[in-house]
Length: 205
Length: 184
Image 1 (spheres, each protein chain N blue to C red):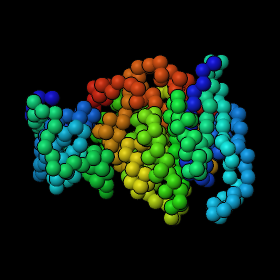
Image 2: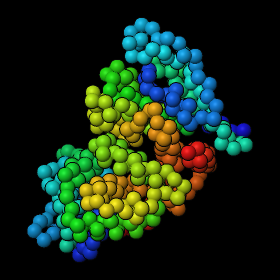
Image 3: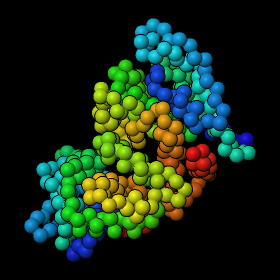
Image 4: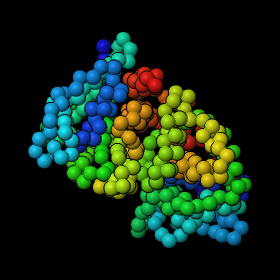
């Protein structure tokens, strides 16, 4: 992942964040918005736990990002962080109490609705409160079906607070690499057994 | 005929018997007898021996579901049962200190014994004395083991736990180089 500068159009910076997390790259990303700027550093799938990380993530998720750039060390796969911050905890903190304006919310809704059907890899999203857990389980249930979860269906809700809640869940799952495209599952022998059982239990209704 | 094995584990009174009942075609429960001693205050009857269920998949495959005994004196059986199993579900009553302590041992033992997928079902989350899932993960030191709040009496929740375990098996086996398919 060579160093680059990009003019952000939409949510490309979210892609970068996800790739860095899923790929466990060592990378420092600088974000620039209208009246804010921030930086996060990642190494081996963890954030650098400094005072800037959470506010920067909150801004990067809730405000327009006009420019972003990143630097990745070429020779080393890790950065010397003094304290590490788990991504799921970082996302919980960054998204807790976040609000998104109508336009931002719709941008997310449109972008995520274009994703292909996905299965959900259950993560330890234990920091979700009961209400979030309820909506996470709805998504998870959809992902357990053979055709997978259709994001446009999951995000097809009218209420602003409900859509916000679901966007938070999808954004977290997306960035943490928990959305797995349905058609991309390459079946191994071991998986065949699990798949047949899963199909049978789906039919138990 | 191939046989797949799934283990349902959890402290005393956590809902293993019900879960197996909800996802089996045939269920053979251990004898329910009156609970004695200190545990009698928590549950009037308990399972002696083991719960066992069979789910027929097709002509070539059956699933055997084993409810591993809740009491810690049966720990010696876990190693035997885990051999060749696809994975395990651990049920935990989050409103009971006693159950939490037992579950702590169980998670530790299972993660040391095996490398198969585990899924945790956290029950009684609606009880005022229940600890949060975050606190539960900390108590159990469960790291990245998937955890769901479930109502152990609900068939749908129990089915979901088994399906979640199977989904974990499927997804953990696959290549995760598909990030480009999810470009926003």
